[in-house]
Length: 175
Length: 381
Image (cartoon, rainbow over all chains, first blue to last red; front, top):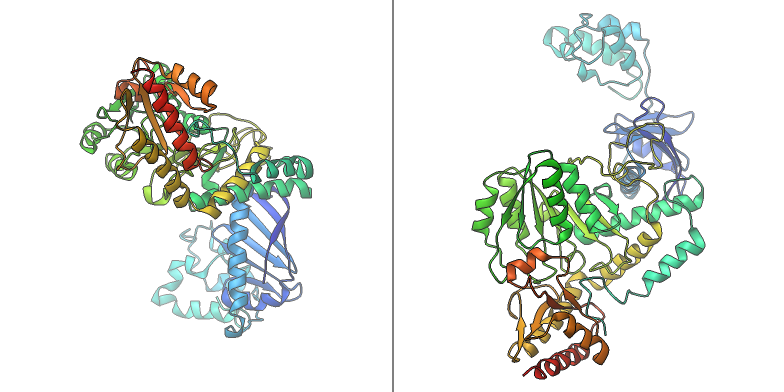
């Protein structure tokens, strides 16, 4: 159960200078909760070796490791404090339901981008927001984009390619 | 005995000076300007105060609360941050100078057109008249929530709905009502609400704020350091940092935090009821007294804990002086920075004597005040 989260430091985001990033510390070790967070958030990035987890709420990214909760891309310190209230409620809710959640220890697997690219339409249509199918493959490998963003892949004629892509990710958290 | 709570509340709850002294002596740092523990503690206090105000006024997000020096600054920020040259603005005929003067300034400097919603001689605002004015179209409508002269409370929810229906943004002046009457800003739906910290909220002077609804963006009134995004030559885009430039009045906000907590523990309902009961007790005592004229809604109608009155053949200044010197009672005489409201009720030439109650006034004090006013009036017979 978290009772408070303190802000240690805030500074501009490296990737987006119009946003801020912050280092914050909870009053308890969050490591035991991480597999349960992983189970609740299919798109969360769980790293077994560092016992950390990273997930997004809109454009905001939270990364949790031990007592630390790092937050990126918020607007103001007031905004950060609102986000910390939200994340505290969210994590305490998971904590209170732990006996009903099966912990998930699966991590993301990262297939080689060329293997993904081979299965894509390769039309560089840009519907996914990326400049090319190669760029999409790279981002999908790192789980920085959802497979659903490639709408042509979901056409009936590409059914087998989609299945092959899903197979590439087998063994880890599913797409 | 103090009866000028509509000007500023007095005394303050003990926790207010205690919290302020605690901050000066034991924390001291400028919030949002450092990463050391004391600066972060100051920043936490700032946030906790926003949240306490959010809970009291039913505001969803702390980022919606921008601290200002007072209501006047909050109103200036909203009025000057919205209005463009040649825009139309609608307002009531009983506004305080905190609204009226910024609008008149914008009339001079930006050729803004002011359309006024008239009121009856007792200050009552007619919604049909409001509809007539608002239906002409305007960018902004500014409404006083409760009159500091007449004591009446305007139907702000209906007015806000009407203004929105005709495409206007709504700015509410809650100087006399925040903390004094129950208020749900989410339900009212106004886009901007100006409030002060030192009247109904019982905090120190130099505190106040502007509620800005999600999605509403104002031009800035001031630019400067915010402790965030310092590399940019421009103000941050997001509230509250966008509007809170320069070091905030954290000592005052420490006191405001204490007062808002104090009010929340008692309950605004209870405070409101007590202040209104006291003023109605005074009205009952004075309503049939020869030579005394009472203004505003009747004793059975809803009103703030304030009452304007006059004694025949006596200026309100003389009456206030006698109250002070002979009876040790403090009440305010004059136009109360609201010439518009005095024009509306026909007291622009003389002004009125205003009695305004607070949480710390008692029935015994009100009875002594009534007795004093009756004696003063009797001497005029």
